[in-house]
Image 1 (spheres, rainbow, N blue to C red):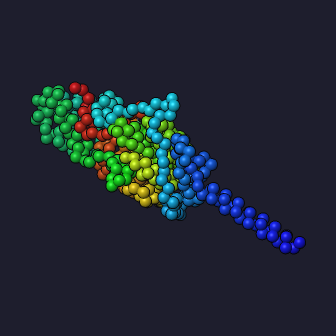
Image 2 (image 1 turned 60 degrees about the vertical axis):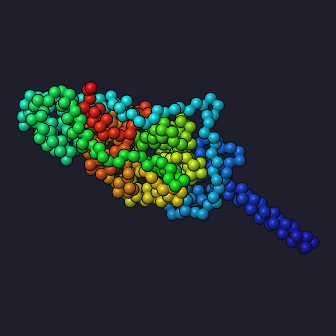
Image 3 (image 1 turned 135 degrees about the vertical axis):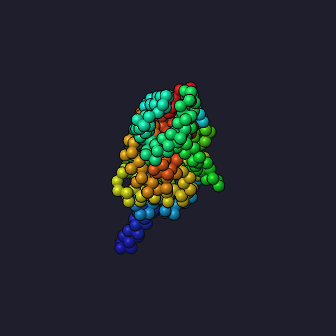
Length: 404
Ligand SMILES: Nc1nc2c(ncn2[C@@H]2O[C@H](COP(=O)(O)OP(=O)(O)OP(=O)(O)O)[C@@H](O)[C@H]2O)c(=O)[nH]1
């Protein structure tokens, strides 16, 4: 009898161990879009034989937000199969226009800056003989438009040396002169190429940073459209896990143009989401992965830690080729102060100035570039999906001055 009891006990223990092994094994593999997992998800349904990832690693990163991340764990190198980029039934992808020439098409959006800056300057310059009061007015107009003291002095000095020419210049000559001088302070020789190209078989990786409310998420969506409009394939990463609505917003932007978004659960580790987004981009061999990051302005060291970690983790997959800082043009000099925190936290390679349509201070482009020493690469000129344009100094100066 005793022998039978011992045999039954051994059998029960063996069954329990076997069952637990099976359960754990089941947990080790989950689909990226499995809503019950704590890790990252793709926004569109994956094929039934979708590959698997290690949720244990993801959960670790998600829960802690520090220490080892998903990326830093050794994870099986499981290929990610993406659903075909074809419209689902009833869903028609939009075709955004290419980015070239957008600034010229959107020049009317700078009307507010044009009337206060461009027209203001032209009116004074057209006076028969310029007095000291006139020069002061020119200076004040430039400063009021946030051009900044250094560039204002440069413009006024150069115009003064040409006052003989000004005295006899026609309206169109004056306009051309002003366009030339404004272009000169806009840094016409700065390299504004976006680092979005594939390199050595890996996608370009763009990190988008900036204070929440600057239009960052909207801008990431618009950048996706710029890239798609220019014929590139894109994956988006919703690493702003602090604000749940940001991921929803990004998904919607992506869906409209057939771009996949990798997102995390609310509160997930941003680095983990960024890692998965880039991993997905590498596997799918897309041209560019664009990652939206959280822009909470907590302590500088907190920001540095978070952005530093995202960059470090992402670069296990593919080098970061562009870090874009999104700034709201309507916040003026305040925005520049905030911007400094970001430039100290991460090596920013380009600035996106949003909401330029909503300000009379178009000169902010000049002061941002001068103060941060970073080129403005894109400008936001409205709420429309394609109201984001590559920045071109001469076209911008033309738009500010207006006419012709
Ligand atoms: N007029 C104008 N509005 C813009 C521009 N860029 C963004 N916006 C709008 O600004 C509004 C507020 O944007 P945000 O509050 O910054 O929202 P968000 O884009 O999610 O920004 P984050 O919180 O940084 O992620 C949205 O309605 C955008 O459409 C622009 O260039 N011009």
